[in-house]
Each structure stands twice: as structure tokens, then as C-alpha cells.
Image (cartoon, rainbow, N blue to C red; front, side, top):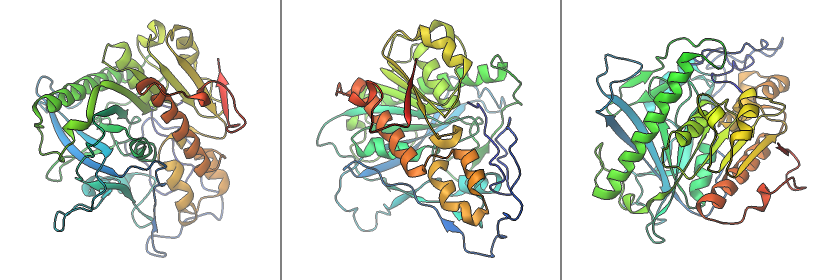
Amino acid sequence: MSTGAVIAAGLTTGLAAAAAPAVAAPRRAPGAAAPAPGAEPPVRLVLPRPTGPRPIGTAALHLRDRGRRDPWVPARPVRELMVQFWYPARSAPAPTGTGRHRAPWMTAEAAKVFQRTGYLLDGYVTLPATHARDGAPADTRTGPRPVILYSHGHGQHRASSTSLVEDLVSHGYVVVTIDHTYDAGQVEFPGGRVETYAMPPLGDGDDDPVIGKAVDVRVADTRFVLEELSRIVRSRRPGGGPLPRGLADVLDLSRVAMFGHSLGGATAAAAMASGVPLRAGANLDGSLFGPVVDSGLRKPFLLMSEDADTDPSWARAWPHLRGWRRNLRLTGTRHFSYTDYEAFIPQAAERLGATEEQIAEFIGPLDGTRAIRVQRHFLRACFDLHLRHRPAPVLEGPSARYPEVRFIG
């Protein structure tokens, strides 16, 4: 499990600027060089279709925590965040002229930075549209819905696991994804301003003070976001701009959980241990840091990891998880299998000149469609159990339906 990004086995000629520290991987196999940009049309990427019946809406919101100076860039007197709401939407067509359409996976200016510095370079791929309508009215007919927060991996961004986010929403959840500014690779603010990664270099080992600080900053971000959600529900007026009609009415803040990938999973655990009012949490392949490793949790927590990983922080924390707990290992996956790279890299592989071996090294040998299906099912089962009190037999033990999933501990 990595707190940073992993170099993508030569999948592209670029390297994420926000990916330090990186674990070097073999270079591209001989003869597997990607065609130059412009030699072939870029591949248009597609997100996997959500499995639930509900239409999806989305809206971004700019938040300012005036009680904090930015911890990474002291010249910024206020900590600024971007969050994005994903929610069940009314299925009625958008009125003519409203400009509501399928929202992009990443905003335009942030996407330019991402494609200059990451694995999915401009000229090789076109980033996808989501399945959500931008600014669509929320579906208020069934009342408030459970809320789930999402925290991205170190150097990643709030769209990193949209495949998982959209699926939860299609089954009736509201998900709020958080960009942790300057820990994220790039964050676009209103007006097109983009702030990029600005953390100090990371050291070695789990006691690295920079990582410890990053977790603390993310926990403070999480607490602030929940405070802002409470204010929105109370006042029906967001402070950072207008929100879609009915959105405040569907936020049930008595039923809140959190999940994240990599350092985002560590953030979920640390936030729960710090008293942030979360009912349950899930960590997708992220090492644990800070007091939670030894103090543990009394609330439900799901651990799901890549194949053959034996993270010492998980083994150390396991005896201290005194609530409902599961430790699942998904055979055939790797660290980035828990992000949208699981869907994107196979689509782009030929255009990028990647071999099957290189793809397997980056996202594992398990078929990407299957990997996403399994992740979606187990993650939703966890939140259905703890936020909706619905039975989750898939979490009771190994099954013939999901032979790839091993129950550890």
C-alpha cells in the first residue's frame, strides 16, 4: 500500500508531478512504444455504467475555512477547498437553455494540468464524461438520504474513484467528494484558478512527519466539510455559491460515513478516531497512520486491499478495531485498482503502447470490469448494513459468487 502514486510501468511518457514519492517500475517493453500524439486519434475514455436505477446529479462547491491559514502554503490566509456533491436527481429532462448536461470527469483547467503531468496524456486519450447531470434538481420524493464522504489518495484528486462514487449514488446515497488542496495533484477553483501539489517531499517510513501532518490536515478538512454541510441543511443557503434545487433537503447528516483510497482511507480511519461524527468507514488499500493504529475504533470499519499485501499498520491496528470489522483482500488487484485507472488503463492500453504485463503490474491481472463490480458490491454492502440496517450476507464470509475475495483475520 502506497501513500504516494506508483509510476505506471512506462504506460505513458509522462509522470505525475504530484506523485512523489514514487516506486519505480520497469520501463516499457521493447517494441511497445506508443504512437506519437497526433499519429492516431486519442482514445475517448468511458466510465462504467452505474448499476442502480437512480439518475445522478452533481454540483461543485467552493468552501473557505476562515478559521485556518492554509497549512501547506502559508501565504494563503484561508484554507480553501473544493467539494463535489453527487446525489439522486429528478429524472425529468432539464429545461431548455439551462445548460445542464453530463458533467465532465474533471473540470477543464484542472484536466489540462492532469493531462500534462499524469499517465493519461493529452493527445493519447480524451477524458470521459460522467453519468451525472450538472446542476440537476435533487430527487426529494423519498426524503433525506445517507451521506458518504470520499477522500482521494495522496497526489490524486476528488474524481479519482468516480466509478465507485456514481454507483453508490445510483443506489440512493449522497456522496460528497473532497479535494484536499495542495495534497491533491490539481484543484480548480471558480474563475479557472488551478492550485497544484505543494506538499514537502516525503520521507521514508510510517513515522514520516509530513504524512502525519497530511492526515491531520485532511481530518481538519473533513470536520470542516461536515460543519459546512450542517450549515447548509440549517440555512438552506450555501456560502460558496448556489446549489441545485432540493439538495439541502436530501442530506441526512444523522447517517454519515466515509471511505477513501490510499491516504484517503487512512483519513477515514483517523477522522473517526478523532471524533468526527461518522457512523462507519472504509479504507481502500491505504496504510494507517497516527493514534488510530494503537487506539483503534469502536465503530464499523472495512479494510479492502490489493492482492498479496501485508501492510504492518493493518496487522497492528486489527486487534484494536473493537466494532464491526472486515479485512478483505481482492485477488488480482493492485494499489490503483481502487481508482478509475482500473477502467481507463485497459481502454487506453493499445494507444499508450502498453503490454499486458505492464497493465497487470499497474492494476493487477484481474479483469477490470470484474474488479470494479466486486469493489462496488462490497462497498455498498458495507454502507447498506451500517447506514440503512440492511442485511449484507456477502460480508459474512467467503462465497462461491466472489471467489476473488479473501477474508483475512
